[in-house]
Picture 1 (cartoon, protein in one colour):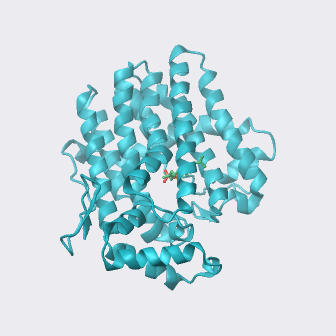
Picture 2: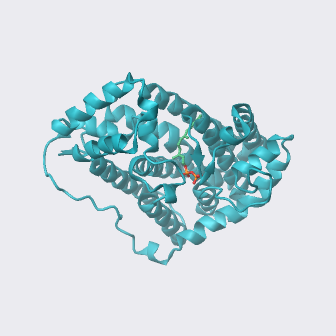
Picture 3: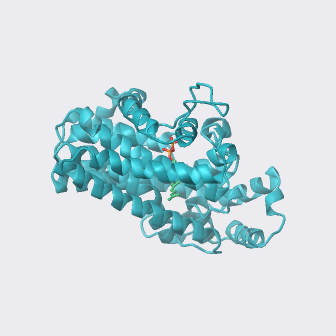
Length: 373
Ligand SMILES: CC(C)=CCC/C(C)=C/CC/C(C)=C/COP(=O)(O)OP(=O)(O)O
């Protein structure tokens, strides 16, 4: 079974079809070191991010420092996993796409990373997730009130940092960030409401994922360019790249949310199944039809009203994951990630930018599709 990627309509076919997970690398991308690209974004953003967190009143400064991995739960200095820093890397690159120095994108990089982390703090609390970035989540360690407050504070700080620049470009950047933040919140509301529905269409799922993940990645890809004085057409095109990159990113996240290795992801096993998420693999499998799809539908419907769900064993989740795979949801989602990757990279062809910057955007897109964490 596969689902027709173009029409979004399930169709039967091609049992055993294999979906390559590695996208075709562009020739120019061969020369790009994605680790160095991510590290550059992190290094440029880090001092500004730390100074921003220092503005928070105690104990929020400490709680935020824990979340970013700078200290451990006992308050001792640490070098924890502060995340991949994909968004800062994109933001400084987008400044270069507009012909500006990467440093020009730094306030945007930090602002987007702050909004991203605000959303993670609240998301972990809403989902009851206990593990993020290889450690206990903030609400587990410091309590729900601190998770809410620090999340709110990061959101406010993001806007503060941009508005303090006091330029016309910063005003435009802030507008794009608030629009993206609203979409992110809409997407989260959709995501949570879908947990309580038996059926969600593939279209609804993609719209939700475009909101909760695509919008902020789109903003990361334009914000540096806007700060660097890019016109709206350039910024909009970079957003189109980022939006589809975000859809590819979330499709991979959905795969990792079921089949990811906890050692690499830093999250619990079967994290999305535990949360009854209607993620792309689940939705695609349910839409596919056939015996595995039907059995999965029955099981998930029973799970929705099961008082024992919290105590499900690893095996019970493994059964559901196997049915999703058998119905074709895993392959379809991997293919969808590749399809969105292609749309993203093709969008870049419509605007002028230095070849090296284009190669770096392409390499980051390639990384998003093959990442394991
Ligand atoms: C309003 C609200 C609560 C919204 C929640 C929205 C939400 C959590 C969307 C998921 C986005 C996503 C793929 C996060 C992981 O990013 P990543 O893999 O880049 O994380 P990293 O920074 O840890 O690397």
